[in-house]
Image 1: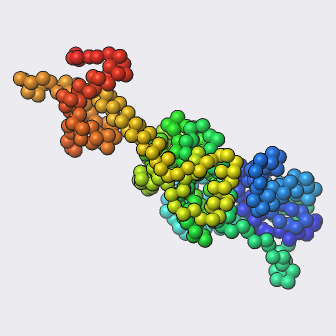
Image 2: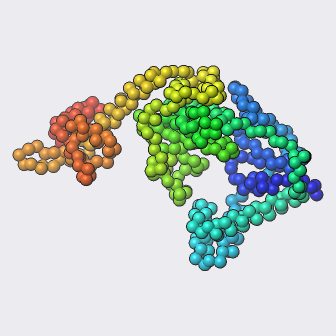
Image 3: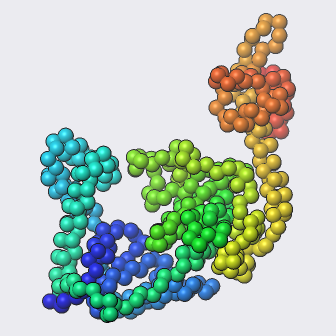
Length: 439
């Protein structure tokens, strides 16, 4: 068997990773584990019409070397197998001494969501949870050793020698990598139907050497399919996690209302994850409306620090690296054009006012159409009462305009005479009918 110095930690991590976007290869000459993403392979097969950063170009060249040497110098590393993972859980449960916990774990792995429920149960038992991690690591190492033996490799661990160690190339600065990933995201997201604006938030808009976040605000129409946008967001987060940084993609509607974030999971549906904190999981696929945890102020949505697309509008001093690495490429590729804050703000305010007025009119009309009459005072006309069931801020605005009256404790509102008159005008406007009295 061929002896080869192998980084067991990297190889074990590759064995456990079931990501469909990552592919791992073992270099049979150096023992190095090479990661090749689908995006790297795509850039090699279909080079983009814009220059890639040096660090990204090196990745693409690595993907080409792996492709050329596959089967001779490079072999594919097997990735996570759910059947083996399930068997690991069964073996571990058999070692649990606590009868009650053991029974809980057996129930947890029955049916769909076994891995998730198994981890949820162990989360309340820290010692057993740590023992599970050790047990799982042993199982993975055993599988790695068996695989190496099957391809004729005997792994060796050589003592480290500083004189012989080659200094690895320095990774790109955090900000440079951050900006390059955001540029790729904007180029992809701007092509999606229903995306109307992309803006930059967070500390990347400052000169902070190590930014805490590079969050993105994307405005989408109500009809926009969020699945492809969520995929781009997962790719953005995944690439940044490789340098221990993160980013969120926040969503807003054209009226400037905060919707939530893109769903971080590949599969988005109710009941898949017990710890999902979305308020209405699955109502709009791939919308993670965790409004109890995070909300963006409407003023920030209306005027974010830097708008990237479809127009470039800077409302704060732009850091030099953001200018050269993000704004200039967007402007140079004709993807975005420079505008002043006044231009966009005027257009946004006009659109926002129109949308708000339409929402108020339609809410009033729906209240009228679903109302019923009550004879409160015999000598006066009956009143029109309707259940609330609409956004409180819209009802408050209608009340301020004298179109309805309401009580905070009551579950219904009463339309005023002016409210009934305007409702009938709206009915004629939208349906072409005028109803003086309703049965």
